[in-house]
Length: 288
Image 1 (cartoon, one colour):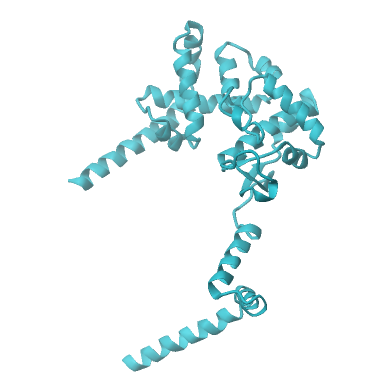
Image 2: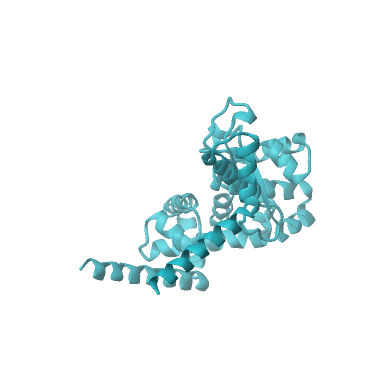
């Protein structure tokens, strides 16, 4: 019986090896070895690079596109061919973009898209150029340059290659919108000043309220809050800085009351906090 089982195992392995040799991957590696005299190790490495570059299996959502751009770790002075590049997923179109277009025109819509896509690329380790934005949005580099200049004049932080030295200056558009709300601006005023739709503004304020609620419940670390609400640590840190400044201003401090009374936010933070307590209790028992 033992001999028979061993024979079946060897037979299955041989059958698997024959089938594997019929695959496209094996044929590709074989051609590299035969026609280019690559070693098996180098051939397999080339196959992996080709797979990562051209056959990324990440699921794409509606309105999303995949784009290759320069890595954010690359400094200025290099030619485009010498730059390390990364693939990023960008939200090219949102329904709210069309609302902005209908209300304020093409320029306002482009600015919203520029702010969103440059930040998305940066969060994934990439930096878009003005040429990239022109290609993505189907306009000339001159048009993009004019939009960028207007955004820079508004002191909004722009994650754009060529402006690396200025990335630490200004505030992100999300913090800008929340700050306007804390200054008692109405929704219509914020829409007019920022060009963003009412839906987008409400989304940013909801995120801010969740950060605020987490802080009120004693969760202080930006990394932990970001994990619970599904936002980046960097954005949470900016919101926490905004909260700290708002607490020093009587009017802005009063504006926090309606935000704190947001029931959905309270429920989400309570749920996250309860999960955190459960994890800490389980970890404590495990250590004992």
